[in-house]
Image 1 (spheres, helix red, strand yellow):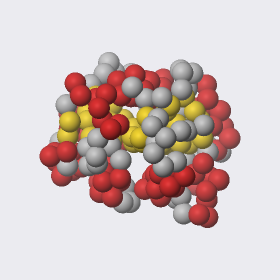
Image 2 (cartoon, rainbow, N blue to C red):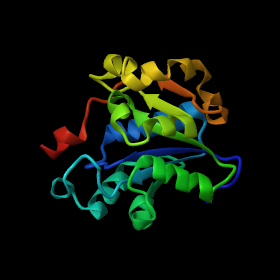
Image 3 (cartoon, rainbow, N blue to C red):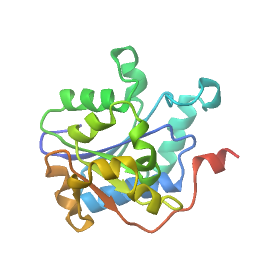
Image 4 (cartoon, rainbow, N blue to C red):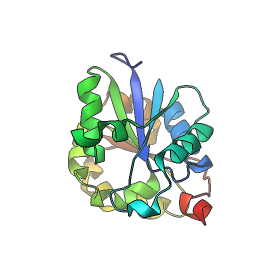
Length: 192
């Protein structure tokens, strides 16, 4: 249950499969931002991938459950359940959460690999203006992501990692880059 005043991270992806790197990003954000919960939003489908290329949603949900073992971790298929209500894109899901849970302090969580391509997401500038965003470093992309189009466009809204605990209370646009020890694993490599 989400209550007004709670700090909640929303962490979306296909998680195909979920792995220790995903758990590392979620746990790093939970700890560094002082979050009460982290909701793993297991997407029914990545809009840029073919349906045939994705593992079925129940298998990806189970994969996420195995990885999200820490306190306050929640696995959700809300995007699949919202389906026709317009939750195909992250911005739609985020707005649905904000409407359903007024007073909850949401933060979008992503790995640095996603920041590098964030400017290709539908509604990415609107998402930056909806909630604060926490970007957790990932191997092989850390430097490139810091100079990504989104990082440059919203450079004025970047907050230091030392102020991460205040990010959930910030008025968007606001984002931070959280350096963390690397977990060199990827879903692509695991799928083989």
